[in-house]
Image (cartoon, rainbow, N blue to C red; front, side, top):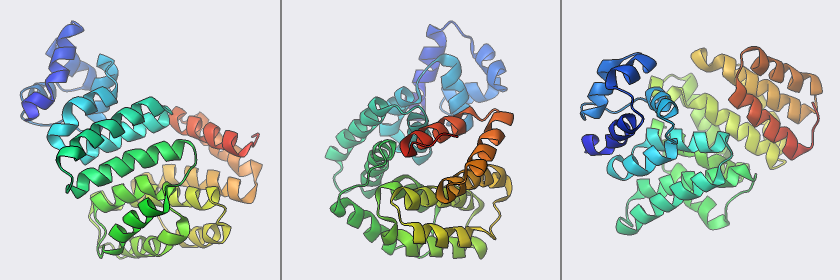
Amino acid sequence: MIVQSNSIIRKTRKSRGISQKELGQLIGSQSMISRIENGLTSPTDCALQQICDILNVPIVDYFDTVFDKKNDLSLLKTALEQAFVNQNKMRLEKICESIKVMSANRPNDVALRHFFLMAKSTMYHLDFNIASASIQQEITDYFFGIENWQYYDLCLFFFVANMISVEHIQSYITDIIEQYVQKIMSSNTSRMVAPVLIVILEASIVQHQYHLTSDLLDKIAPLTFYQQNFEFQTWLLFWEGIFEDNVQKINDAYDITHRLHIDTTKSLFDRILTHYHIEK
């Protein structure tokens, strides 16, 4: 399966006239390219992004080739994040359609249904819209049954939270924070907590649920996210600036992205300020 799913890398590399050795040198490991092309391993998110950039292959094209064989949550996450950053609705529609076709043959596959909702929600996110009441109920019913939050659950939460009324998921945020503080999550799961809190903070502001924004900021204040803390604090500073109508905080967040050349975050900041008609 992996041999078939990664054939796009081998075929595209050869069509570009790039040897396996040359591609390996560009990403730092020829042996990894060899293992990927021979079906011995799958690329990490970082390696996949590098390979697709070098070969000029959109992540969504790799996704279409691979996802139906692997149902890879990590691959879906990468594809959705890239399409969102690029504000590429056509790619998101293509991903939705790919998953919809797969779901027709496996109507009882809950994961595929969730993957479809993650893709659909990313489209909603581009327009700052929320989903129908029935879809919101479907998702909150799933979250209601979770006792210990796992990586899969937090990935789902991260992608669908923006299309659900924040009032309906407020209690789950409390559970997530408590489990993070108690250190009962795996390290992989813990790394999803910071992005989840930022997207909930955004949703509370977009939905004008400012009492929930204030409550969430109080809960966030004492938290530390180690490796992610700098990125998290930059986003936190930005959303505090929006919430407080504090231009200085917004400009400080921009200054960080400029100094560190974080162009993707800056482009997302630009998009949000345009939505709010705010001039920095």
